[in-house]
Image (tube, rainbow, N blue to C red; front, side, top):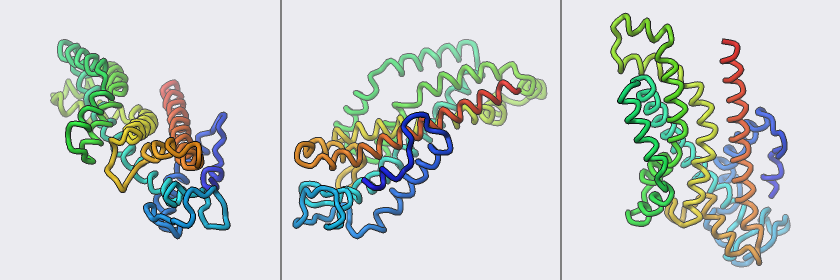
Length: 281
């Protein structure tokens, strides 16, 4: 557990620089760590099955029931969870910003129809639908990314719509209308760029949300296929070994919690900075 304990994460009042530093360390450890350690994620060490964390046998965070190194598996799983979460969050960001910008700037019947559609979409038990889709169809990475992005974009779309409706009466937008710019051009070159600071704030919320959804699906066995696995898959395995080898559960749980806490704290700091900027303007 040396990696998790060395992150310098203060669980109460974590400042934004500390949150950014934590995310950077976690990402770097997940990317580089498995290459630096002497074990492969799926390499069993039958002589040291279910051993507790220690230095004598070389397994710093212990091993699971078949001798696989918990530290290496946790870091390798971090690659999957962080990559899937980030890509799905960026996709959700694009969908939410574009949808909200179109709805907010269009106004009238178009806005009302898009908001109604958004309400219906948000009311659906989307996680249940995602589980059904991933169960009925062959699992694939594009389907997984689309499912996670579809589950987390609606809140951003609502906020982006309200902001775009405000921008509809902004002087620079009215000037573009007077100069004969098309609606598509105004949305693409004036409205969406003004929504990017809002998007940066929400990206900090979308990433942990997407990671959490991926971990939930992984816990159910519906994320990426074996032998690759994310933190959710490791949590599912850890629950099965919780009584005999609790470290198998604690290591991925600690990294998941640290990631979610740091990302959320960073998002809060960005939101405060954006709000302060708006007040000055």
